[in-house]
Length: 116
Image 1 (spheres, rainbow, N blue to C red):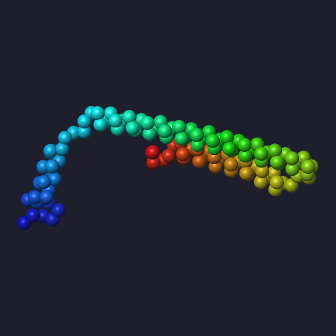
Image 2 (image 1 turned 90 degrees about the vertical axis):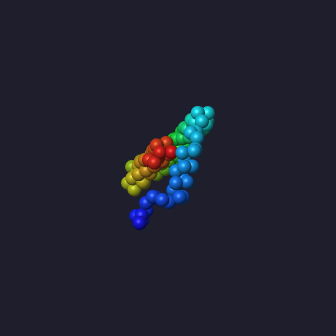
């Protein structure tokens, strides 16, 4: 009696092994085509990563310039001496959060943890 899970005497397993031996290796031309397709895919990925990275950086810089401009106008209108501490803290916190957030998004997009 054969053990469960063994393929001894199993005609289906013999057919699979026989068919596998009959398979021809992949021609060199097909390998070259696959390598070319992978290289093109990597190039497209790199271009998209550059667009996302530089686009996010540009948007962050515009946002920071607008936020700083509004804050400076507010501080000038309110008077620098009467500027609430909460306004300064909110401005500084928003600036730091924006910079860290954009850096994290760019880092995860350009350098994904699981590869492609």
